[in-house]
Image (cartoon, rainbow, N blue to C red; front, side, top):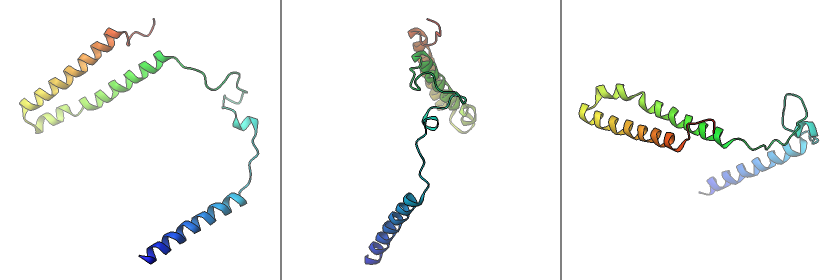
Length: 117
């Protein structure tokens, strides 16, 4: 037990010494206004980098990700049909597709799929 504690202590001390030495020896970088500013194709930024973005764009991106994951879940369905009971496969597939269709209808009913308002 004592050997494990000694090894752990030596490891921590050696790591601390190496981190301190690298901090002291490393080349210090001066803060440059150009290097700390956001990159805009070599030009000075005209506006703040923290501009608000459209919530409609965010909503469309989230809906796209949801449908993308749904497609990834739908792809193995034909393969699993061969290895499972056809009645249970049909029940699960129908329930899954019904949930997806109800979700799509809800998004359409709420107006989430309409880009221009």
